[in-house]
Image (tube, rainbow, N blue to C red; front, side):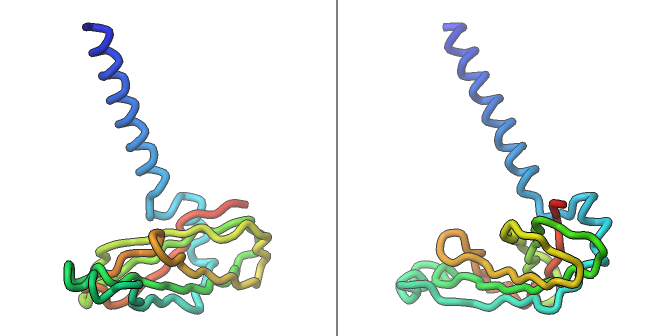
Length: 148
């Protein structure tokens, strides 16, 4: 009986560690490395809009916001003097008063992002799309991670 309790306790501790690690890796706060270059990236476009999903009429009758998702696009220019392999940006969703109520982050494709080059981000559709919320008014973008 003690062996079973030990196994269950071990599985529980491992699941807690896994959850904590996955949450830490999925943060939408800028890393130290990205913070150094924050002023070197200029967003020329950062916008999100509401898009209906298939069967949105049925879904909206069940729950007000469930028939929509957010589609977002951002264009960022590398104004630094360094080349990067990959960037990760975060779309921060703002309310009318400017409060952040949710965020969505996305990595760029693996590429050589040279100085002066602009790259485009577009959110995925379907299950991996950001959820729509009636609080949504606008979006703010920032670079939160990078790979050299």
